[in-house]
Image (cartoon, rainbow over all chains, first blue to last red; front, top):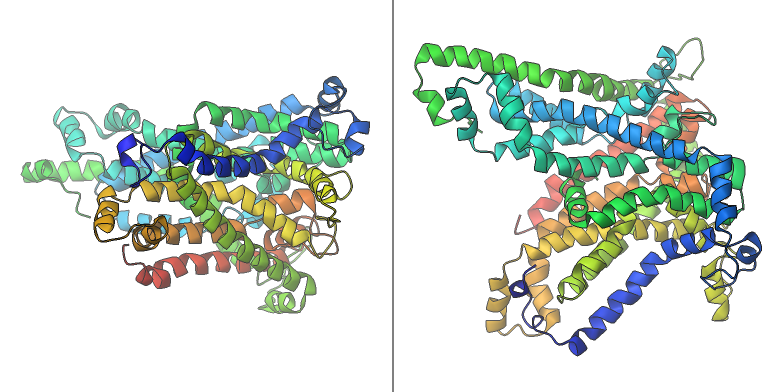
Length: 287
Length: 309
């Protein structure tokens, strides 16, 4: 992004010449932000103003306490957010614990069966997470672990994508590092702990962002694994519960709930934009 | 793929043998947790879903029977499923080109100058990190036929807006608009990465060769060199669109009158509302086949047409 890397004609452009581009981007940007703007605006409005269908974004009277208060009184929204954090963290820990060593072994260690394992990884990349849902549900129902954190976490503990990504990452790592460690008499385990794990941070961070965004926002599996008006609802499920059970057409309260559940990730994104964009696109392969 | 590096081959034979054994053992121990989780959570369930698709299994039923292709035959006859399949195809067919062209245009606009790059990139990327269920409820308000700002704006222009999500004529279009909003920023960022990878020398060379206008610069340099990126974006976008579920589950539940049923939502209701597991598994198999076909399309057919892969 240095100034020298522009297309010809675009660098050193004066503000006046750049104005049409900025104007177009601003209009499009504003259009894009409309759902957020209205979401926050309506979450501040009293019911009668919402139903008057006014185009005014600023409420005449603020109903913050009413709308947000209703959310906090009627659903354990804090609990939902906590559940989201617990589930995302649980999933991430297992994904890293499983995929990081496997990725390293498949990149740097010689053993029979390595190519077969990699073929399975490639095969696994073809399978969307929705596909194993029915058998997993049946198995979980029969073992009685539906409606538990385990049910929310277990199916996502294996990410073939993470294995694939760590394998690519470790392949780019110089072999000398590992050989030098072996020469120094380090065992395979110490190599993993003292050389590989500390060096894997860039890939692990990128994957962590991708994983947390995916699972915080996931609706499909929580909808299946958790039933009733459970205490185990994730943020996505919480919004659905609140709408169907409590809020209905009370858009003010509904938008308050939507705002509360959207804020954590959006705030994290705004604080670490570059990392988020890199993480999600680098790992975007999984779609 | 030979990762046997030099220092190892310089070691004496017995030592190498010993190291090789230890290495293989370590490799299996390091991959074992992943293998177990893979087999339990992905491999067996995926094979099982294919098997269940050939049975009449219903949750809670005492027994199940092998029914061959009966579930798939029923799918063909089932008007609900045919609608669902058609709606999904429509959603993919609308959101894919619009969010790809839109993503590319946004990327070119952002890359076209130095001002406000990070800002606008963040604005358009925001939907990717937003809780879709929450944003869907915001769209529900915006597209509300009487109190929604979209129709209010149209009224101000003297136009009677449609009942966006409530009418079977417009519901899939409305969902497609939301789908584009959700995906375009992601594609934009992929194109931005593709654009920065194009060597500046090529633009300079093209200018020397008489390529002057931005328009011809795009078609002679940018577009051909974006080939691999575009191909990747195309497949990713189609697969992401194929998986549309959240907005349907939140906003329409397949309605009105099944007008917005899509594959995953039909699969969900058949399996987890009606507990017709065999039938739902058959839908899952159709979904899986569609995804695999798209993936193969990328590697087999389209790859040959892209010159700079």
